[in-house]
Every structure is written in C-alpha cells, then in structure tokens.
Length: 319
Ligand code: 5GP
Ligand code: MN
Image (cartoon, rainbow, N blue to C red):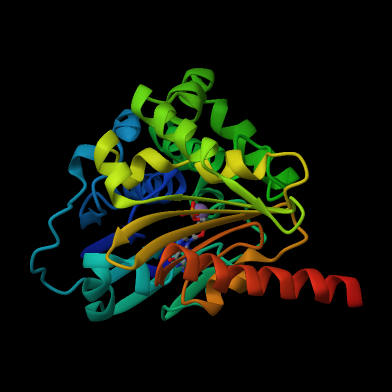
C-alpha cells in the first residue's frame, strides 16, 4: 500500500482508532496525523478518539483530538487504525460514510474492513506499520516520539514475542531523533498512580488459580471500582501481572461494566490462543493478548471461558 498515493486527491481526511485507546492506538493515530499534516498542509485533517489517558499528553497535538463525535461532513479518506470498524465507537459512522476507507491494523482477528486494507498480524504494533508506510525523509522528532510510544506499549518495552528485528530497527531509527526515550518509557509505561497501584494490589490479592495453577482469574466489580474511584484506564497492566505468576499459562482479568456485563482481558504464554477464545465471544485480539465483553455473572463468565481454555489444553495433548 502506498499511503500518500491513496490520499493524493483527498481534501478531507479523518483518522480514528479503537474505543478505550491504548498506547499503540494513540501513538499510531497521532503519528499518522502529525505526518499527514506535514506532507498535506493543504488538506483538512482530523483525528477522532475517546479522550486518551493523561500519560499521553506528552505527544504533540493530543489536545487537537476530537472526542465529541458530532455530525461531520463525509470524509474523502478515513483511516481506521489498530482495530476493525466495529470498535471505532463514535467514529464508526464517519468511516462508513467516507468515499475511501483505509484499514491499517495488526490484529489477527481482523480480516480487513476497508476499501484498502493493510493488516499485518506479524507486526508488533500498528505504530510499526505506520512507520513502514510513511516517507522516512519526512520523519521528525515529534512523529518519532508518537510511534515509539506505540511500539513500546504493544511490545511491553520490546519484551513480548511480537518484537522482531524489524521492530528494533524501526525503534533504532526513531530514537535517533534524540528524544528522552528512557523518560518516556518510565512515565508512560511503568509509572503508576497510587490509586492504580492499590487497585492492582487488590486484584492480585483476590486472584484465584484454577486448572492446577495453569490459569488465574481476578474480577473487579463495580462497587470496588467505585470505592477506589478507578476507571478502565487505571486497570491497564493488571492482566500482564497475573500472567507473570510462575506456572500460569493463561491469565484472565475482568471488570464489571454493567449489570451482568464484564469487560474481559486475557493473556497467554503462547500455549493457549486467547484470540480464538475472545473471537468466539465476539471480541478479538492477538494469540497472546485478547479481549471481549461478556454477559452473565462473573461465575458464568469464568465457567464459559474455562471450558474453552480447557478444550485447547486437551487439543494440545492430542497433537
Ligand atoms: P486488552 O486486554 O489490553 O484490553 O486488549 C488486548 C488486545 O485485545 C488488544 O490488542 C485489544 O485491541 C484487543 N481487544 C480487547 N478487547 C477487545 C474486544 O472487545 N474486541 C476486539 N476485537 N479486540 C479486543
Ligand atoms: Mn495495537
């Protein structure tokens, strides 16, 4: 795909990513936004996202993000990043109304929802894909910083198995612009507020292991979240911490989003394909990191999920 060719004639260009935007979603949207503003100064370019967490304020232009999703004139080109259209939230209608729809993503569960699709499941992150698509000559420190944040968030600071030689080559070029990457990693990835640390502690304390310690689950109900004053943004990282427990192959973390409704996050060490399970329940993601929304009591949700996890352990034994 040739990025600039695809939006050559476009006067109105829109960009959006998934609901509850994470580092890769914000980084890829802002990296593309800053780049297009630079190379297409004549075009009307807008970026739409739910309000990103405060840690992303260090990215140039985040205050220009539109989060109100009011009525919009149709776009000539609309980019759907880091997801398929069904998780664009308020921007989904802009995408469908656009003359040309472009989907750039790295989720294995996404079969491509645009007129032009660039979906590469092997890529570490959508930010790495944006890095590959933009003209390297036009890259600058602010675009580099946005894309770097996206890459470190989706690779767990180059720890996860989605990190490839190409990812590190991209990162090498990005840090050559001289921003304080060490501080960015600390302040956007590792640093947690006291509230976030307390709720992490609570989730770990109340976790329960099952299947001989190969799986672990933790649930936060609405009452507990309200007690701490926690929002979904405060829960990032809990599920990876659960996955780090020795012997755990599959970790499940869920928090209540409504009456008999839970947002589920899953992480796997590689033996279990959590994207398959999440997709079965209407969500999606990657082999080792996926999510979905499920209905029922927390016990119903765990029972339904564990049937699928167990099925995969049995299939593994049979092969
Ligand atoms: P997390 O557990 O951090 O929310 O998400 C893990 C991965 O699964 C991310 O790549 C995220 O985009 C994806 N994911 C999480 N929830 C959903 C969902 O409800 N639907 C889809 N399609 N993907 C999800
Ligand atoms: Mn991503």
